[in-house]
Length: 186
Image (cartoon, rainbow, N blue to C red; front, side, top):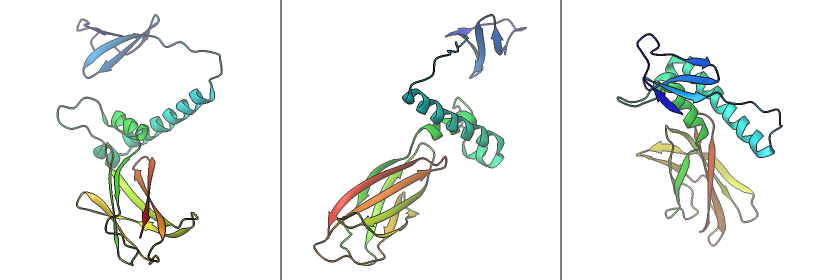
């Protein structure tokens, strides 16, 4: 791939020309060889990557078409790119759960569980499930965002000495989900 310095008459050239592709990126014309199509079927892994990218591209197009979403993905001052690329990138990256804090969870109703999660744009929802040792769900529900973290308050009591698993699931705007589980003895 090369950057091209074109005369004023050709500035902003985009498209295909004789086996080359011209693209405008950050105000500069970039020249690359035209991608070659193959008649071979992809491997299952390649097909999965293509499907994932197609979903991300569809999300990017939906953001570009919606002024309210486009504003959420607008690049900051001096940033390269556009809202489509920012949305596509967000769709390709799942949120990250940094911690499920259960130190204050003692198995009583109202005990807090704190989830610390982040995403390149925004974590839109976090849900929590508390499961017994056999994997049966004892309770579940949404966490509330407050002070840079997500907080869930237990709605059922758990017998002292019981071992439970706390599963937190973080979601972002494109629908990516990440789950982190932590086992706790109360």
